Image 1 (cartoon, rainbow, N blue to C red):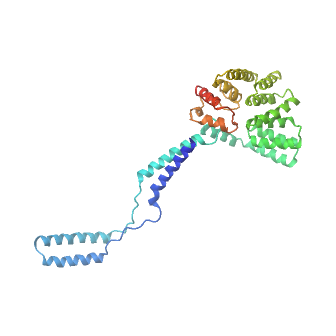
Image 2 (image 1 turned 30 degrees about the vertical axis):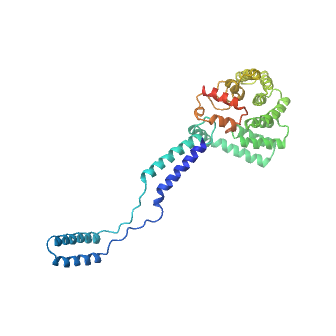
Image 3 (image 1 turned 90 degrees about the horizontal axis):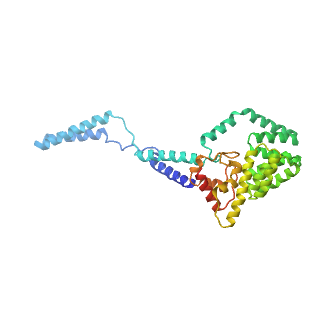
Length: 349
């Protein structure tokens, strides 16, 4: 769909160039009028001829003399006028308006941003980050200190600050430096595992986070994302096990995790039904693939709210986001039948 709009915009731009093409280069002046001396000579000759004529011929000649004399007066008193350009103004205006409309549509629907985020909200977020100069200054100061000291503690302080600011690229750089200096740092390993999950690598996330929870069975953040990674991989029994350990360790988001457990069990039941020949259920697909980030009722969480989200009304947008990912959301692996069932379910939200 985006490609169609881009091609349409290019066609409109070509029409605009075509309409304005006559304006190129310096204008050519109109051919100069006959010299006044030539007009005077013609007038004098007609006067001589009129003396020898009579009747209607004489009247016509005298009328011609009057016309030429008026022309001579106008010519001697008028400045030289440059030639005008003939521009297809209606086409030019129509093409300009069309380009503006197409440009607005392209910006509205193709500008990179999180799913469902509008230009306004995206600008607000950017503005908020720009206004918080103190936090950005602190982050830069911590990075400079970490580069100077080059110890695990300094890099961890920088990475944690970047994490709090949602600058995940900087956080990943910081945690990697921590692990280069201290390969047993569980905080860095946990955050790297979560970053693997957020980047669309659930297998790597599960491997890293399982090591973290084996070392610290009460690490609730690691247990939560370990369950999320298992769920994304379709390993629902293992996901349920990780989330139940999260609840046993006193994780702060118990209500949400209980819903995730119920959804995972529903997914196991759906798989059993599918093996018996039934097609995928859209709500079950959503609960298994999307609820961990977008909430069990699409109310939002790590990901944006989907209920009432305008992105659901854009043809093909959700399917493209699911297949390719966007922003911090990774691509989600699912069959075409599951995707179609999911899209049908989301349309009803």
